Image 1 (cartoon, helix red, strand yellow):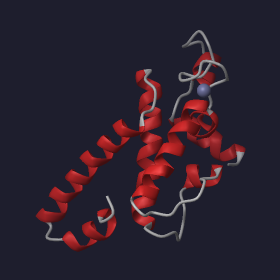
Image 2: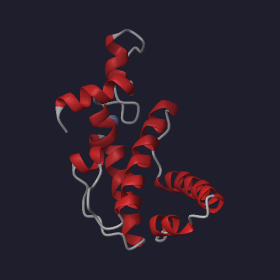
Image 3: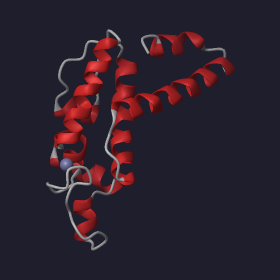
Image 4: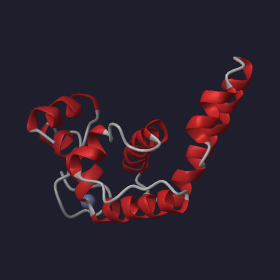
Length: 146
Ligand SMILES: [Zn+2]
């Protein structure tokens, strides 16, 4: 991920490193591990808690027969174009990052089962919308494995 992309995201998602600079928090350290400066790159990719979370997500995707190899930094941040189950996989990546940031804000650790529960709620909401618009086919194509 390029530095300019990180700066753009930092304008919208505050981190302790940024909040420390402007005097809002007393430490720039990571909300999860408390060791490193908290940047979005650290929260989404490099933190030990995040690395463990992504490993569990990949393992879970494999259990759904969605073949994703190790996610690289670019794939985590920007998604995976033209992969198998592209819509589902990229939605999972997007919601996972949203969940990681939610955990950071709530000062809780990311847990794959909690994330999957959140994903299930989104799936159920999309089912209601698909039924109301009589568009179950695209819904099933996206969520079929889950
Ligand atoms: Zn950390």
